[in-house]
Length: 284
Length: 290
Image (cartoon, rainbow over the protein chains, first blue to last red):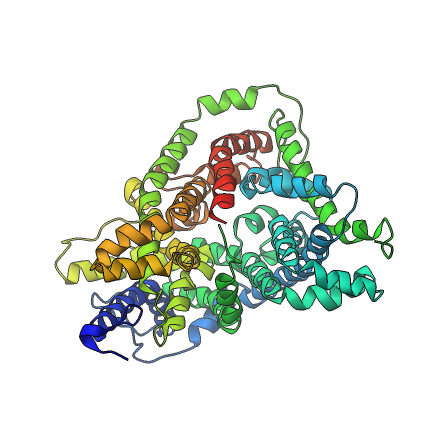
């Protein structure tokens, strides 16, 4: 390989590498710094001044007392369980509902297919906030106001996810299906043995984003839930912030309880996500 | 298709179709119906004609909210169209450890807006990190009221939105950059074009459609902003409720004894009216970029 003067396009020279790593470190401080600051605040004891002008990112005497403290102030663990219940319903609903409908819309011919597809597409121009009030009226009418099921149900089959799964199934060559048909495979067998193995990437993207979306959601549970017993983590944290803003250590501990699980989930699954990006799964 | 009974496809589509009808189509229609009633959060509702729409025209708080949306858009669109593109170019090369940096830059996106806004509230409060550091370095002589001043609060929420959005749009650009012809870059390189010229003459034209797509996406999300303003202002909407967004007003009227679902629905229709243009544009651009 030629060096220096003859260095080809496509390999980074030492100067470029240095510049890139330097800039990336600056961005890293800006994007991750606030999270580290919050983590550090959550680990500082009552005896440590958290308002120093020169920020101390390393707690002098790290303690987990604030995590116990936040649990004494609000039922943070049961809020976490509530968030988990909602997220589990949403993930399950989307994984199953979007897969089934996506497959039918991509691979089966039936009357009304184009109409259904058009209606799914039409919902995409509607921001969720526009229908959130009548959504609430619907949920209330079903007797699900102030329940976790009421929070989870509307998002349990996302229209966008149906369309994403349809796109994934469409990219499976028709020959494969035809071969299975000749072998006498029925719809279910074709879905399970030919469809599913070929859409794993998109399915994992749908699962990851259903989980993140449900776990992070704020506006909808804020509208549906009224009894503090039923709050999800995000609503509970905002409630904590409004009531006990005197101690930032507790709020910091609370935010970490909401933040760390999502980071773990994403860190474990991120290779599927970035693979999906390279395959063009993520678009606007 | 001899093996397929006529109802099999419908069995597969049924759950999604029910959801479409109950949680999407019906609420869309019902929003229009509710907008002409005085429905309350605790039930009821009587036809009141165009009363809610008359109220829209002289709602001073709504005027502020719309002004906030315009400012949000004007600041966010250029920043979030350009910065994430630069970021994507920065992390495009597959250097050792690059997936760590990409994941790290994406972290603010996966965190809940509530978590992020609580962190920023702590960083920006009167005795927080930013005020402390700025005074320590002599940039400020006294603390700035980032969270209690009408304009500073809006600015804080906007910076939070920009910060949280960087990674999201970076990923969209990263996906688009993969499709920019490598030969063009190479040819420009051979012709002696430096990195800056190659950025403007090869990269930017190559992702022009994506840039258009991203800027429309940002406009729509600026109109839909809620959590940042809500959490940073503790749900109050800032001094005199002047830092509300349209969605915050919708939420406010959805609750409690003073709530008014009819008026909230009229506001929802207003939100629809201002987002439908960009949304349709988005669908077209998406097809073009794909």
